Image (cartoon, rainbow, N blue to C red; front, side):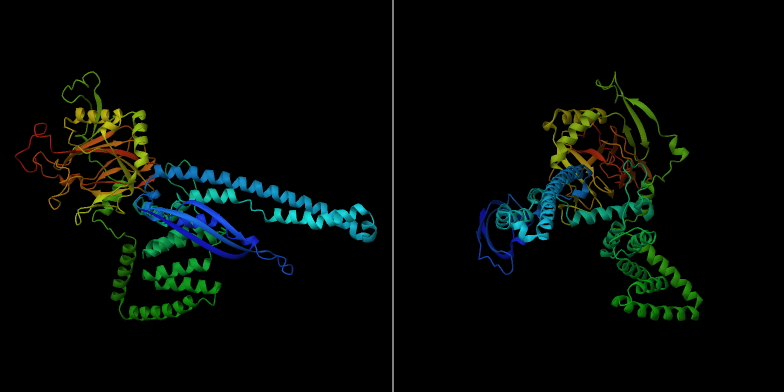
Length: 597
């Protein structure tokens, strides 16, 4: 269905501030309207000599075509930039193009100002000479003629030059590029990612603000405004713990002399309230008094001061009456402060999960003796008799093995190029609705690639079948994933549990019997695959692949395979995985009689 809409915008403005078609195009673009034709009909009213300005009635007619179903609004077509570093790289080239356009605009403005400056200098010299002897100067007939000419013609030309808008090219480019800009959701998502990294890797705000992260190539620092923004994002989520941390960092940087447009009063306002919400009345009172020294008329701070003083007096009185009560209250405050920092989707194993992500997991000597490296040919498979692959045990139970040099750099680039145009926000299966949906605990983008689309993908699938001995004809297509800022996938199972009997019903191939995970990039810091139930950490190694069974031979799920993708602290993480299903494996991996075998 195509709808044609005529937008008429009459405006009474001075010529200097006249509404332009460019502005209307921008408005239509922001509204998700595709503009295919635009024109202006201008009516110029009489010239008002007394006010020395021209009033312009501008009637702008814009023909807009909305193709419903094919062209959606910007909000609906948003691509969640922050969830994929790979797609975010395109934004850098967009920004570079805008900088080039901006520099062209600056050159044009400088050229225009240079012409005006030369005119001014010329007229300054001329008028100085002429006003010393006006009659004598105008006694020369050529001077008299040129005066008439300048005032009647040349000053009008100068006016046109002054009024000439040199920004059309830059603004048009910016308007077009703006369609592909990140939005508030991206900015908030990136801010929450920094907070997530702060918690997962036990980083203090100063370390993040100064850019002292492990493995960084391009060190960058955060301004007071950046820290203040993170604090506001946390405050919006009622996360007063992180609000305090980032507002305190912003305040500290200002106290150290950093110049900022952010008002210190606003920082103190957020900081004192967030601290009060965590039960530290005395500290909140101290900060409120500091705020009032800067702005004695601050209405909210004056109200808070009285309230904090009243509550603190009440608390001190209660503490005097009962030391025991004081100890309990102190414990309660400490516990309250700790809980403020935990996310809403709290995981029972979060502490273990974050510890493993930091590399704090250890392998006991007894277990280490069970882990070996070997050359593997999968029972003398014809393709690997002469060139066996390097296989390394990462864990014994569940058995997780790594195959080194499984995929070449050239093959990786082919897979990435196939995936990039179709990367979409990764989804999870909602057990309640049975539908796929996005989730904050899975921050990445993924794409599915079939074997027929490229000989490289077909070879990868065949290689997986040769090394595992499992039939991949009933497996899912190769899923390629790229993680975003702080990209992660919190602890989960790959197989469908008993309370999800219809998890893969539409595929008709049974449950996910095994997982094959390919690392297509190295990661400077973070990004490990961790198995929270057993304490195993598997670190990304470009070109390698890891494999494990999700189900026992009996078909029962192995709950020890609960795993997670840790947040990427520094770097860009690309992976691809192949989920192999039960159908077709009846004779390749026969069912066992023991449920847990």
